[in-house]
Image (cartoon, rainbow, N blue to C red; front, side):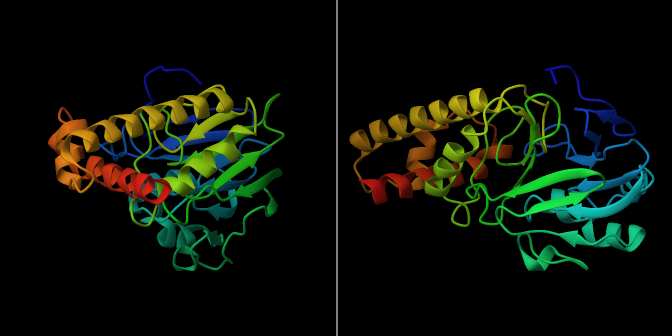
Length: 265
């Protein structure tokens, strides 16, 4: 749970008493070191739950399937670096796959906000913090160590900040979700990308401060360019130094923030 280097993709690494992960071999500008597929279990090698099988990588999926008796598969949101291998993993294990969006369920029902699931000897509460996408969910493990843990998917990352997949994800939803997540206190953050983080409440405050700073920057740019400034014009001013590989993501964030400001006034 530190900023230490991420393990090689062929290793399964323990994060907390109830959670281990395997790092998929899909590093990139948006996936950082790769997608972390989590294995939740009360006993290593026993019944388990896999969260986000990740890409359609046979080696990765086979290693996850061999980690224990997979009872259930959970999906944090629809993006392919989390879901591409889900149907194949269902075929390999026979375990039902459940997501908020029916389109990503295989042999299982859609997840419901507030639902409590018991599988792999672990009690898992479903939270629905919209914002990154409209189907984003997190998973709260209250009994995972002294403060519990939360698998945050892409809602909170281990490094950097979350991109809002606007217009499917909105800043209004995201800010409301941060408020709710902050109420969970000092839970360990288990993100889908980047290192684990120690204190959810503190991380949420950092995220909110970052969003407030960006909104202040955009208000300043609109004051100079006019209220009808385009997404491209605002992005040129606020995100002038971002690499081309993440320029599209920056423009999505600008679009989400402009909509937020224009709705709220």
